[in-house]
Image 1 (tube, rainbow, N blue to C red):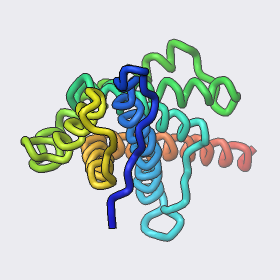
Image 2 (cartoon, rainbow, N blue to C red):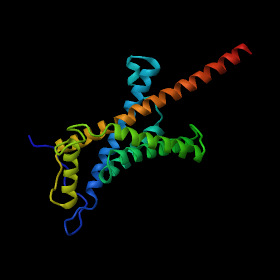
Image 3 (tube, rainbow, N blue to C red):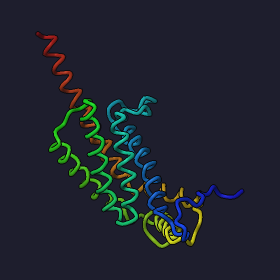
Image 4 (spheres, rainbow, N blue to C red):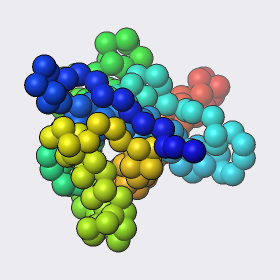
Length: 214
């Protein structure tokens, strides 16, 4: 049975690609960001409630998931032009900036632009650090035949027009290496969400005790 393929799309009359490599990298990054946010939720849920089936229920807002998906999309494109450090930094900054920006717009969690920029900068730095920490993994994102090298080679061939399709195997390797390379950032976000939830719950309990005693 032949591999699933992505057909030729977006071509100029000359036959050259019109950013198809960026489009594919963005699509893989989008899915990676979405899955990564879910992983962060599972980590946060486990730290708050312990092991149970409830840890599988997403706990973040839709704004956060949109931010993570678009952040992953941007990071996927950045992957083409920078290493894991640059991609991680861009992903962390964009994820937080978009997610918190949307929450502020919808009124779910109002923040000043200055606060959003500071939080985004911190998470961008975290993305760079975790990107560096999770780079150099043999056969995943390091080495001539690593998943990362195979995926980049496939994207380059499609950009140059020397290949007209990308196999399911190469796409899977691209997604796998992006997910593993960004797993440090997912873990970071999971712990960050846990700390925010504990802090919120602590304040809430104190407020309840004050109201009750009053």
